[in-house]
Length: 423
Ligand code: GDP
Ligand code: IMO
Ligand code: MG
Image (cartoon, rainbow, N blue to C red):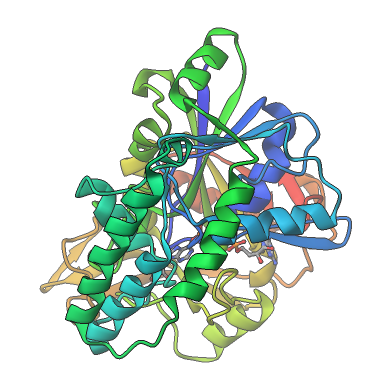
């Protein structure tokens, strides 16, 4: 049985959480493959909004198993808070939430290191969510990390101490003057680890292998977006994992030839939170309208998201890198009311017009070239059938499908589960 992937094609926050929730009814297993609590995945149904950071977005359905894969980094403190939130809704998650033994742990000192590293960078800071993601993946690739499976060993606290001591020396090196009370942070951490240990830890690659043999359906859920990928994103303003399709193979132990559909999610415009280049960024009323109507504030940090027109050069690149087979366009409703819409179809780069993403997309190197399209004024938020969509929106969609050579199979017209149009 094939595995499908769902991932973001821009700089994150495309609406992955909403769509995973919408699709979960068709799957036996939802599996997160990378990232950590830097993610904020929002789901809305029955008038309630939920934000998940580490737990996969299928958790609110009765039957699906939700698996946190080996490629994910887990902060027990944040994980416990997520569980506390589920408890408030009397959700029985114990029977359907599994964690890979090979997932790495975010320690309190990883978070402090993240803050110290950012402080040392001054204006060149990444704009990290400060959840300790970079330092944890550094310890993973540096072969120093502590994994979920280690929590089952008797000596894990000694290993913890040795690593935390090393981190303290590194924090001193930064001389960042960041104040912290490690004793307090560790108490909170060890309490949360106790809670984590009440969940089921598994050899998830073997579990997924068996599931595939039994014909179970699996949806792999990505975090962040393709332009934040450690290899293919706008480095160094990226996250520390492979957010692109290949990350699902390494982050779950799924073989490339088992992957069938790759669902690529994008907003009908573009947003970015944190630092880094963003060629189509707007600093005018249009950008403000997108931010206000789209409520563009980070689900994890609450920071305002930068907004701009859709960038087809970047989107095409993401479609290619991921092998996207089906596109899903989010937040179409936010563009209602614009007389004219702009789509960036090429860049002016070193005196030439180019249609591929060059090595450097800093503002001094690229100027977007736009195609203009007529906007629509209809409120889309109550629509639920493709036949209701305004003519101009259909033209916008057709233009993108032609340029990207990929069908748009879902048009999302609001944050709620029900505000989803299948084409
Ligand atoms: P994720 O990180 O990709 O899961 O996305 P986020 O949850 O961080 O951000 C997406 C935001 O847009 C959330 O607040 C969603 O509730 C909201 N959202 C998702 N789809 C739509 C849509 O079609 N229209 C509108 N107006 N909001 C949406
Ligand atoms: P979801 O899954 C949007 C951004 C941060 C920063 C950079 C590095 O909700 O789409 P990190 O904390 O990883 O060191 O931050 O990446 N970033 C995100 N932006 N959505 C996310 O996740 C993000 N996760 C990280 O703002 O620019
Ligand atoms: Mg998000």
